[in-house]
Amino acid sequence: MRRRIIFPVLAFIALLIVISSLGAIYILKTRAGMESHLESAAVYIEQGRYHMAQTEATQARALAVRLRDGSTVEELDVYIVLIEAVLQGNDYLDSGKYQAAHTEFLMASDYSSLLHGLGSDYIEYMIATTERFINFFSLMERADNLAGLSEFEAALALYAEAGSTASALSYTEGMEKAAAGIADVRERILQARLAEADGLFSQGDRSFQSGSYEESLVYYLAALVMYMELDDWHGAAITRSRIDTVEQTLADIARQQEEAEKEEEAGQPDEPDQGGGPGGTGDPGGAVGPGDTGGGSQNTGSGSEEGDALANYDHNRDIRFDMSSLIDDQNRSPANQIRMGSTDGRNEGWYNGCGWVAAYNALILTGDPQHPADIVHYFETNKGTVLDGVFGTYPQAIEKYFADLGYDVSHILFPQLSIDIDSAIRTAGVGILAYAHKKAAHYVAVEYREADNCFIVYNDSFARTRSAALGLENTTEAGAAIDSVLTFIHDTPDILFSFSLIMIFS
Image 1 (spheres, rainbow, N blue to C red):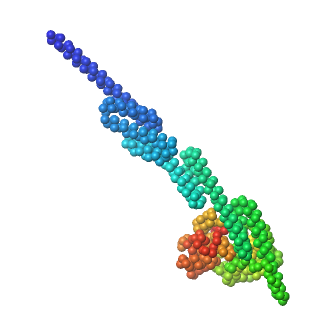
Image 2 (cartoon, rainbow, N blue to C red; image 1 turned 135 degrees about the horizontal axis):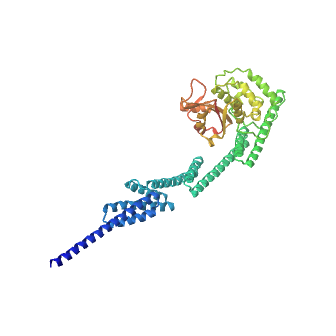
Image 3 (cartoon, one colour; image 1 turned 45 degrees about the vertical axis):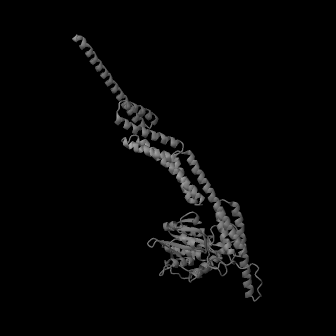
Protein backbone atom coordinates (compact mmCIF):
# COMPACT_ATOMS: atom_id res chain seq x y z
CA MET A 1 0.00 0.00 0.00
CA ARG A 2 2.80 2.33 0.94
CA ARG A 3 4.56 1.49 -2.29
CA ARG A 4 1.46 2.32 -4.29
CA ILE A 5 1.43 5.78 -2.69
CA ILE A 6 5.16 6.50 -3.00
CA PHE A 7 5.38 5.70 -6.71
CA PRO A 8 2.90 8.33 -7.91
CA VAL A 9 4.55 10.89 -5.66
CA LEU A 10 7.93 10.15 -7.11
CA ALA A 11 6.49 10.29 -10.59
CA PHE A 12 4.93 13.67 -9.88
CA ILE A 13 8.19 15.00 -8.48
CA ALA A 14 10.03 13.75 -11.51
CA LEU A 15 7.50 15.47 -13.75
CA LEU A 16 7.98 18.72 -11.88
CA ILE A 17 11.72 18.40 -12.30
CA VAL A 18 11.33 17.78 -16.02
CA ILE A 19 8.93 20.71 -16.40
CA SER A 20 11.27 22.97 -14.43
CA SER A 21 14.21 21.91 -16.54
CA LEU A 22 12.30 22.51 -19.72
CA GLY A 23 11.24 25.96 -18.42
CA ALA A 24 14.78 26.87 -17.55
CA ILE A 25 15.95 25.73 -20.94
CA TYR A 26 13.20 27.84 -22.62
CA ILE A 27 14.12 30.89 -20.58
CA LEU A 28 17.76 30.46 -21.41
CA LYS A 29 17.02 30.07 -25.10
CA THR A 30 14.66 33.06 -25.06
CA ARG A 31 17.20 35.25 -23.29
CA ALA A 32 19.91 34.12 -25.66
CA GLY A 33 17.68 34.97 -28.60
CA MET A 34 16.83 38.36 -27.08
CA GLU A 35 20.46 39.17 -26.49
CA SER A 36 21.36 38.02 -30.00
CA HIS A 37 18.70 40.26 -31.56
CA LEU A 38 19.77 43.14 -29.32
CA GLU A 39 23.40 42.71 -30.32
CA SER A 40 22.45 42.54 -33.99
CA ALA A 41 20.37 45.72 -33.63
CA ALA A 42 23.38 47.54 -32.16
CA VAL A 43 25.64 46.31 -34.98
CA TYR A 44 23.18 47.41 -37.65
CA ILE A 45 22.84 50.84 -36.02
CA GLU A 46 26.58 51.31 -36.10
CA GLN A 47 26.56 50.27 -39.77
CA GLY A 48 23.76 52.72 -40.56
CA ARG A 49 21.41 49.89 -41.63
CA TYR A 50 18.44 51.15 -39.68
CA HIS A 51 15.68 49.07 -41.29
CA MET A 52 17.53 45.88 -40.30
CA ALA A 53 18.18 47.38 -36.88
CA GLN A 54 14.48 48.12 -36.48
CA THR A 55 13.56 44.47 -37.20
CA GLU A 56 16.15 43.15 -34.75
CA ALA A 57 15.22 45.60 -31.99
CA THR A 58 11.50 44.81 -32.36
CA GLN A 59 12.15 41.07 -32.07
CA ALA A 60 14.43 41.58 -29.08
CA ARG A 61 11.77 43.66 -27.34
CA ALA A 62 9.11 40.99 -27.91
CA LEU A 63 11.36 38.40 -26.28
CA ALA A 64 12.13 40.77 -23.40
CA VAL A 65 8.39 41.16 -22.81
CA ARG A 66 8.01 37.36 -22.70
CA LEU A 67 10.82 37.22 -20.19
CA ARG A 68 9.19 40.03 -18.22
CA ASP A 69 12.60 41.77 -18.30
CA GLY A 70 11.44 45.32 -17.61
CA SER A 71 14.88 46.97 -17.69
CA THR A 72 15.69 45.41 -21.09
CA VAL A 73 12.28 46.46 -22.44
CA GLU A 74 13.04 50.06 -21.41
CA GLU A 75 16.47 49.90 -23.05
CA LEU A 76 15.00 48.51 -26.24
CA ASP A 77 12.37 51.25 -26.24
CA VAL A 78 15.26 53.73 -26.45
CA TYR A 79 16.73 51.72 -29.33
CA ILE A 80 13.45 51.76 -31.18
CA VAL A 81 12.82 55.50 -30.70
CA LEU A 82 16.36 56.25 -31.91
CA ILE A 83 15.86 54.03 -34.96
CA GLU A 84 12.46 55.51 -35.78
CA ALA A 85 13.85 59.07 -35.50
CA VAL A 86 16.65 58.26 -37.93
CA LEU A 87 14.29 56.54 -40.38
CA GLN A 88 11.86 59.44 -40.19
CA GLY A 89 14.74 61.89 -40.67
CA ASN A 90 15.85 60.00 -43.77
CA ASP A 91 12.32 60.11 -45.17
CA TYR A 92 12.11 63.86 -44.57
CA LEU A 93 15.53 64.35 -46.17
CA ASP A 94 14.48 62.38 -49.26
CA SER A 95 11.35 64.52 -49.63
CA GLY A 96 13.25 67.81 -49.22
CA LYS A 97 11.91 68.62 -45.74
CA TYR A 98 15.33 69.55 -44.40
CA GLN A 99 14.30 71.40 -41.26
CA ALA A 100 12.04 68.52 -40.17
CA ALA A 101 14.82 66.05 -40.95
CA HIS A 102 17.25 68.11 -38.88
CA THR A 103 14.85 68.00 -35.92
CA GLU A 104 14.54 64.20 -36.14
CA PHE A 105 18.30 63.68 -36.28
CA LEU A 106 18.78 65.98 -33.30
CA MET A 107 16.29 63.86 -31.34
CA ALA A 108 18.12 60.71 -32.46
CA SER A 109 21.35 62.25 -31.15
CA ASP A 110 19.77 62.76 -27.74
CA TYR A 111 18.73 59.08 -27.57
CA SER A 112 22.15 58.02 -28.86
CA SER A 113 23.73 59.70 -25.85
CA LEU A 114 21.52 57.54 -23.58
CA LEU A 115 23.00 54.48 -25.31
CA HIS A 116 26.60 55.61 -24.79
CA GLY A 117 26.91 57.18 -28.24
CA LEU A 118 25.51 54.25 -30.23
CA GLY A 119 25.29 55.25 -33.92
CA SER A 120 26.58 58.75 -33.17
CA ASP A 121 28.91 58.93 -36.20
CA TYR A 122 26.09 58.42 -38.69
CA ILE A 123 23.68 60.63 -36.77
CA GLU A 124 26.15 63.53 -36.47
CA TYR A 125 26.93 63.22 -40.17
CA MET A 126 23.22 63.48 -41.00
CA ILE A 127 22.85 66.47 -38.67
CA ALA A 128 25.70 68.21 -40.50
CA THR A 129 24.19 67.27 -43.87
CA THR A 130 20.78 68.69 -43.05
CA GLU A 131 22.42 71.84 -41.69
CA ARG A 132 24.23 72.27 -45.01
CA PHE A 133 20.98 71.92 -46.90
CA ILE A 134 19.28 74.42 -44.59
CA ASN A 135 22.22 76.78 -45.04
CA PHE A 136 22.05 76.38 -48.83
CA PHE A 137 18.42 77.44 -48.98
CA SER A 138 19.05 80.27 -46.52
CA LEU A 139 21.89 81.54 -48.71
CA MET A 140 19.72 81.33 -51.81
CA GLU A 141 16.88 83.20 -50.13
CA ARG A 142 19.21 85.96 -48.93
CA ALA A 143 20.84 86.18 -52.35
CA ASP A 144 17.44 86.44 -54.05
CA ASN A 145 16.42 89.23 -51.66
CA LEU A 146 19.65 91.17 -52.25
CA ALA A 147 19.33 90.75 -56.00
CA GLY A 148 15.79 92.13 -55.74
CA LEU A 149 17.21 95.17 -53.93
CA SER A 150 19.90 95.59 -56.64
CA GLU A 151 22.65 94.76 -54.13
CA PHE A 152 24.35 92.83 -56.90
CA GLU A 153 27.86 92.32 -55.51
CA ALA A 154 26.55 90.98 -52.20
CA ALA A 155 24.06 88.75 -54.05
CA LEU A 156 26.82 87.31 -56.25
CA ALA A 157 28.90 86.45 -53.19
CA LEU A 158 25.98 84.61 -51.58
CA TYR A 159 25.09 82.74 -54.77
CA ALA A 160 28.71 81.63 -55.08
CA GLU A 161 28.73 80.44 -51.45
CA ALA A 162 25.46 78.60 -52.05
CA GLY A 163 26.97 76.94 -55.11
CA SER A 164 29.97 75.76 -53.09
CA THR A 165 27.66 74.38 -50.40
CA ALA A 166 25.58 72.53 -52.99
CA SER A 167 28.75 71.14 -54.57
CA ALA A 168 29.93 69.79 -51.20
CA LEU A 169 26.55 68.05 -50.90
CA SER A 170 26.71 66.76 -54.50
CA TYR A 171 23.33 68.48 -54.80
CA THR A 172 23.08 68.91 -58.58
CA GLU A 173 19.80 70.81 -58.55
CA GLY A 174 21.19 73.20 -55.97
CA MET A 175 24.31 73.84 -58.03
CA GLU A 176 22.11 74.59 -61.03
CA LYS A 177 19.96 77.00 -59.01
CA ALA A 178 23.02 78.85 -57.70
CA ALA A 179 24.52 79.05 -61.20
CA ALA A 180 21.24 80.39 -62.56
CA GLY A 181 21.19 83.04 -59.83
CA ILE A 182 24.74 84.13 -60.68
CA ALA A 183 23.90 84.30 -64.40
CA ASP A 184 20.78 86.36 -63.70
CA VAL A 185 22.62 88.83 -61.47
CA ARG A 186 25.45 89.23 -63.96
CA GLU A 187 22.92 89.99 -66.67
CA ARG A 188 21.24 92.54 -64.43
CA ILE A 189 24.61 94.12 -63.65
CA LEU A 190 25.31 94.31 -67.37
CA GLN A 191 21.96 95.96 -68.03
CA ALA A 192 22.45 98.36 -65.12
CA ARG A 193 25.89 99.37 -66.37
CA LEU A 194 24.60 99.78 -69.91
CA ALA A 195 21.85 102.00 -68.51
CA GLU A 196 24.49 103.98 -66.63
CA ALA A 197 26.56 104.35 -69.78
CA ASP A 198 23.45 105.48 -71.65
CA GLY A 199 22.79 107.99 -68.87
CA LEU A 200 26.31 109.42 -69.18
CA PHE A 201 25.87 109.64 -72.95
CA SER A 202 22.52 111.42 -72.56
CA GLN A 203 24.03 113.85 -70.05
CA GLY A 204 26.78 114.54 -72.59
CA ASP A 205 24.11 115.38 -75.17
CA ARG A 206 22.34 117.72 -72.75
CA SER A 207 25.57 119.48 -71.82
CA PHE A 208 26.53 119.90 -75.49
CA GLN A 209 23.12 121.28 -76.39
CA SER A 210 23.39 123.82 -73.56
CA GLY A 211 26.80 124.95 -74.79
CA SER A 212 28.81 123.35 -71.97
CA TYR A 213 31.24 121.66 -74.34
CA GLU A 214 33.97 120.81 -71.83
CA GLU A 215 31.39 119.24 -69.55
CA SER A 216 29.89 117.24 -72.43
CA LEU A 217 33.33 115.85 -73.28
CA VAL A 218 33.76 114.57 -69.72
CA TYR A 219 30.46 112.67 -69.95
CA TYR A 220 31.13 111.32 -73.43
CA LEU A 221 34.56 110.05 -72.46
CA ALA A 222 33.15 108.35 -69.36
CA ALA A 223 30.41 106.75 -71.45
CA LEU A 224 32.96 105.61 -74.04
CA VAL A 225 35.03 103.75 -71.47
CA MET A 226 31.96 101.99 -70.07
CA TYR A 227 30.73 100.96 -73.53
CA MET A 228 34.17 99.53 -74.35
CA GLU A 229 34.36 97.65 -71.04
CA LEU A 230 30.92 96.18 -71.77
CA ASP A 231 31.87 95.28 -75.38
CA ASP A 232 29.07 97.50 -76.67
CA TRP A 233 30.86 98.54 -79.83
CA HIS A 234 27.78 100.16 -81.32
CA GLY A 235 27.48 102.49 -78.32
CA ALA A 236 31.24 103.10 -78.40
CA ALA A 237 31.17 104.03 -82.10
CA ILE A 238 28.34 106.56 -81.62
CA THR A 239 30.11 108.05 -78.59
CA ARG A 240 33.38 108.42 -80.53
CA SER A 241 31.46 110.33 -83.17
CA ARG A 242 30.08 112.66 -80.50
CA ILE A 243 33.59 113.19 -79.08
CA ASP A 244 34.87 114.10 -82.55
CA THR A 245 32.08 116.65 -82.84
CA VAL A 246 32.89 118.21 -79.47
CA GLU A 247 36.61 118.41 -80.22
CA GLN A 248 35.93 119.97 -83.61
CA THR A 249 33.56 122.48 -82.00
CA LEU A 250 36.14 123.43 -79.40
CA ALA A 251 38.81 123.71 -82.08
CA ASP A 252 36.56 126.02 -84.13
CA ILE A 253 35.87 128.17 -81.07
CA ALA A 254 39.57 128.40 -80.28
CA ARG A 255 40.34 129.37 -83.87
CA GLN A 256 37.60 132.01 -83.90
CA GLN A 257 38.88 133.46 -80.66
CA GLU A 258 42.41 133.56 -82.02
CA GLU A 259 41.24 135.29 -85.19
CA ALA A 260 39.21 137.77 -83.16
CA GLU A 261 42.23 138.58 -80.99
CA LYS A 262 44.40 139.10 -84.07
CA GLU A 263 41.81 141.40 -85.59
CA GLU A 264 41.56 143.35 -82.36
CA GLU A 265 45.33 143.70 -82.19
CA ALA A 266 45.35 144.93 -85.80
CA GLY A 267 42.76 147.53 -84.93
CA GLN A 268 40.04 145.96 -87.00
CA PRO A 269 36.47 145.76 -85.74
CA ASP A 270 35.44 142.47 -84.16
CA GLU A 271 33.10 140.20 -86.06
CA PRO A 272 30.33 138.40 -84.21
CA ASP A 273 31.46 135.15 -82.67
CA GLN A 274 29.26 132.49 -84.24
CA GLY A 275 30.60 129.61 -82.16
CA GLY A 276 29.59 130.78 -78.73
CA GLY A 277 31.77 130.47 -75.63
CA PRO A 278 33.65 127.31 -74.84
CA GLY A 279 31.13 126.32 -72.27
CA GLY A 280 33.55 127.31 -69.55
CA THR A 281 34.44 125.23 -66.60
CA GLY A 282 33.93 128.04 -64.13
CA ASP A 283 36.47 126.27 -61.97
CA PRO A 284 39.96 125.12 -62.93
CA GLY A 285 40.01 121.40 -63.44
CA GLY A 286 42.15 119.92 -66.12
CA ALA A 287 41.11 116.28 -65.85
CA VAL A 288 38.97 114.39 -68.31
CA GLY A 289 37.37 111.00 -68.44
CA PRO A 290 39.62 107.99 -69.05
CA GLY A 291 40.66 106.57 -72.36
CA ASP A 292 41.70 107.64 -75.81
CA THR A 293 39.08 109.65 -77.62
CA GLY A 294 39.45 107.49 -80.69
CA GLY A 295 39.15 110.41 -83.06
CA GLY A 296 39.72 114.11 -83.56
CA SER A 297 42.93 116.04 -83.24
CA GLN A 298 44.88 116.78 -80.10
CA ASN A 299 46.77 119.64 -81.74
CA THR A 300 44.42 122.59 -81.81
CA GLY A 301 46.83 125.29 -80.62
CA SER A 302 49.43 127.07 -82.70
CA GLY A 303 52.83 125.50 -83.40
CA SER A 304 53.91 121.89 -83.40
CA GLU A 305 53.43 119.63 -80.41
CA GLU A 306 57.17 119.01 -80.06
CA GLY A 307 57.95 122.70 -80.33
CA ASP A 308 55.39 123.54 -77.67
CA ALA A 309 56.79 120.83 -75.39
CA LEU A 310 60.32 122.20 -75.70
CA ALA A 311 59.19 125.78 -75.20
CA ASN A 312 57.14 124.81 -72.17
CA TYR A 313 60.03 122.81 -70.73
CA ASP A 314 62.42 125.77 -71.04
CA HIS A 315 59.84 128.01 -69.39
CA ASN A 316 58.96 125.58 -66.61
CA ARG A 317 62.55 124.74 -65.63
CA ASP A 318 63.16 128.37 -64.67
CA ILE A 319 60.33 128.31 -62.10
CA ARG A 320 61.63 127.58 -58.61
CA PHE A 321 59.83 125.03 -56.42
CA ASP A 322 60.43 123.94 -52.86
CA MET A 323 60.57 120.26 -53.70
CA SER A 324 59.45 119.27 -50.21
CA SER A 325 56.30 121.43 -50.20
CA LEU A 326 53.01 120.00 -51.39
CA ILE A 327 50.80 122.05 -53.70
CA ASP A 328 47.39 122.65 -52.19
CA ASP A 329 46.11 125.35 -54.57
CA GLN A 330 47.06 125.28 -58.24
CA ASN A 331 45.82 128.85 -58.59
CA ARG A 332 48.75 130.17 -56.56
CA SER A 333 52.35 130.77 -57.54
CA PRO A 334 54.46 128.98 -58.52
CA ALA A 335 52.01 126.23 -59.66
CA ASN A 336 49.88 128.63 -61.64
CA GLN A 337 52.89 129.58 -63.78
CA ILE A 338 53.65 126.07 -65.08
CA ARG A 339 52.65 125.69 -68.73
CA MET A 340 51.37 122.52 -70.42
CA GLY A 341 50.16 122.18 -74.00
CA SER A 342 49.46 124.96 -76.48
CA THR A 343 46.09 126.27 -75.45
CA ASP A 344 46.77 129.96 -76.09
CA GLY A 345 46.41 131.49 -72.65
CA ARG A 346 44.87 128.50 -70.89
CA ASN A 347 47.97 126.36 -70.74
CA GLU A 348 49.07 127.40 -67.28
CA GLY A 349 48.67 125.52 -64.02
CA TRP A 350 45.73 127.54 -62.78
CA TYR A 351 43.61 126.15 -65.65
CA ASN A 352 44.76 122.68 -66.67
CA GLY A 353 47.32 121.69 -64.05
CA CYS A 354 45.46 119.41 -61.66
CA GLY A 355 46.83 116.25 -63.29
CA TRP A 356 50.51 117.13 -63.03
CA VAL A 357 49.88 118.69 -59.60
CA ALA A 358 48.40 115.40 -58.36
CA ALA A 359 51.40 113.49 -59.73
CA TYR A 360 53.82 116.04 -58.17
CA ASN A 361 52.13 115.75 -54.77
CA ALA A 362 52.02 111.95 -54.93
CA LEU A 363 55.76 111.84 -55.65
CA ILE A 364 56.50 114.00 -52.60
CA LEU A 365 54.30 111.69 -50.50
CA THR A 366 56.27 108.66 -51.70
CA GLY A 367 59.57 110.39 -50.99
CA ASP A 368 60.63 110.84 -54.63
CA PRO A 369 60.02 114.50 -55.60
CA GLN A 370 60.28 115.49 -59.27
CA HIS A 371 60.28 118.99 -60.76
CA PRO A 372 56.97 119.88 -62.46
CA ALA A 373 58.88 120.66 -65.68
CA ASP A 374 59.89 116.99 -65.95
CA ILE A 375 56.41 115.73 -65.12
CA VAL A 376 54.72 117.98 -67.67
CA HIS A 377 57.32 117.18 -70.32
CA TYR A 378 56.62 113.46 -69.90
CA PHE A 379 52.88 113.98 -70.44
CA GLU A 380 53.42 116.23 -73.45
CA THR A 381 55.82 113.85 -75.20
CA ASN A 382 53.93 110.62 -74.40
CA LYS A 383 50.50 111.58 -75.77
CA GLY A 384 49.30 112.20 -72.24
CA THR A 385 47.49 115.52 -72.74
CA VAL A 386 43.91 115.84 -73.87
CA LEU A 387 43.13 118.17 -76.77
CA ASP A 388 46.74 119.39 -76.51
CA GLY A 389 46.27 120.29 -72.87
CA VAL A 390 42.91 122.05 -72.97
CA PHE A 391 41.42 119.27 -70.86
CA GLY A 392 44.53 118.37 -68.92
CA THR A 393 45.87 114.84 -68.69
CA TYR A 394 44.68 111.30 -69.40
CA PRO A 395 44.55 108.97 -66.36
CA GLN A 396 46.42 106.31 -68.33
CA ALA A 397 49.29 108.75 -68.85
CA ILE A 398 49.61 109.29 -65.10
CA GLU A 399 49.50 105.53 -64.51
CA LYS A 400 52.22 104.97 -67.14
CA TYR A 401 54.35 107.77 -65.72
CA PHE A 402 54.53 106.15 -62.29
CA ALA A 403 55.06 102.71 -63.81
CA ASP A 404 57.97 104.06 -65.87
CA LEU A 405 59.45 105.50 -62.67
CA GLY A 406 59.46 101.97 -61.28
CA TYR A 407 56.41 102.13 -59.02
CA ASP A 408 53.95 99.30 -58.59
CA VAL A 409 50.67 100.87 -59.66
CA SER A 410 47.09 99.68 -59.94
CA HIS A 411 44.55 101.61 -61.99
CA ILE A 412 40.80 101.16 -61.46
CA LEU A 413 38.25 102.85 -63.73
CA PHE A 414 34.97 103.91 -62.11
CA PRO A 415 36.12 102.64 -58.69
CA GLN A 416 32.77 103.31 -57.00
CA LEU A 417 31.30 100.47 -59.07
CA SER A 418 33.85 97.80 -58.26
CA ILE A 419 35.95 98.39 -55.13
CA ASP A 420 35.99 99.87 -51.65
CA ILE A 421 37.87 103.10 -52.37
CA ASP A 422 38.79 103.71 -48.73
CA SER A 423 40.26 100.22 -48.29
CA ALA A 424 42.16 100.50 -51.57
CA ILE A 425 43.84 103.76 -50.57
CA ARG A 426 44.59 102.43 -47.08
CA THR A 427 46.34 99.46 -48.66
CA ALA A 428 48.39 101.54 -51.10
CA GLY A 429 49.02 104.49 -48.80
CA VAL A 430 48.89 107.01 -51.68
CA GLY A 431 46.40 107.36 -54.51
CA ILE A 432 45.40 109.74 -57.29
CA LEU A 433 41.64 110.11 -57.64
CA ALA A 434 39.84 111.69 -60.60
CA TYR A 435 36.22 112.76 -60.47
CA ALA A 436 33.78 114.75 -62.56
CA HIS A 437 31.96 117.68 -61.03
CA LYS A 438 29.26 119.96 -62.36
CA LYS A 439 31.65 122.30 -64.17
CA ALA A 440 34.55 120.10 -65.26
CA ALA A 441 36.71 117.34 -63.80
CA HIS A 442 39.55 117.21 -61.33
CA TYR A 443 42.49 115.13 -60.06
CA VAL A 444 43.55 115.01 -56.42
CA ALA A 445 46.33 113.22 -54.57
CA VAL A 446 45.11 111.35 -51.49
CA GLU A 447 47.21 110.11 -48.57
CA TYR A 448 46.06 107.77 -45.81
CA ARG A 449 47.48 108.59 -42.39
CA GLU A 450 47.25 105.54 -40.22
CA ALA A 451 48.24 107.39 -37.04
CA ASP A 452 45.24 109.72 -37.38
CA ASN A 453 42.98 107.23 -39.18
CA CYS A 454 42.04 109.80 -41.79
CA PHE A 455 42.64 110.69 -45.42
CA ILE A 456 44.44 113.86 -46.51
CA VAL A 457 43.30 115.29 -49.86
CA TYR A 458 45.58 117.77 -51.63
CA ASN A 459 44.61 120.58 -54.02
CA ASP A 460 40.85 120.30 -53.58
CA SER A 461 38.50 123.09 -52.48
CA PHE A 462 35.59 120.66 -52.02
CA ALA A 463 37.67 118.62 -49.57
CA ARG A 464 38.69 121.74 -47.65
CA THR A 465 35.02 122.65 -47.25
CA ARG A 466 34.11 119.19 -46.02
CA SER A 467 37.16 119.10 -43.75
CA ALA A 468 36.10 122.34 -42.08
CA ALA A 469 32.58 120.99 -41.59
CA LEU A 470 33.98 117.87 -39.94
CA GLY A 471 36.43 119.81 -37.81
CA LEU A 472 39.32 117.79 -39.24
CA GLU A 473 41.09 120.44 -41.30
CA ASN A 474 44.86 120.78 -41.19
CA THR A 475 45.96 124.10 -39.76
CA THR A 476 49.73 123.87 -40.03
CA GLU A 477 50.27 121.98 -43.28
CA ALA A 478 48.84 121.42 -46.75
CA GLY A 479 45.86 119.23 -47.46
CA ALA A 480 42.37 118.70 -46.12
CA ALA A 481 41.60 115.88 -43.68
CA ILE A 482 38.48 113.81 -44.28
CA ASP A 483 37.16 110.65 -42.65
CA SER A 484 36.18 108.80 -45.83
CA VAL A 485 37.00 109.33 -49.51
CA LEU A 486 33.92 107.38 -50.57
CA THR A 487 31.65 109.49 -48.36
CA PHE A 488 33.37 112.62 -49.64
CA ILE A 489 32.47 111.70 -53.23
CA HIS A 490 28.91 110.69 -52.38
CA ASP A 491 28.09 113.62 -50.10
CA THR A 492 29.65 116.51 -52.02
CA PRO A 493 26.73 117.97 -54.02
CA ASP A 494 28.86 119.29 -56.88
CA ILE A 495 30.70 115.97 -57.44
CA LEU A 496 28.97 113.74 -59.99
CA PHE A 497 31.06 110.54 -60.00
CA SER A 498 34.62 109.27 -59.71
CA PHE A 499 36.07 107.82 -62.89
CA SER A 500 39.64 106.85 -62.03
CA LEU A 501 41.72 105.74 -59.05
CA ILE A 502 45.44 105.16 -59.44
CA MET A 503 46.92 103.38 -56.41
CA ILE A 504 50.67 103.91 -55.95
CA PHE A 505 52.57 101.35 -53.90
CA SER A 506 55.97 102.62 -52.79
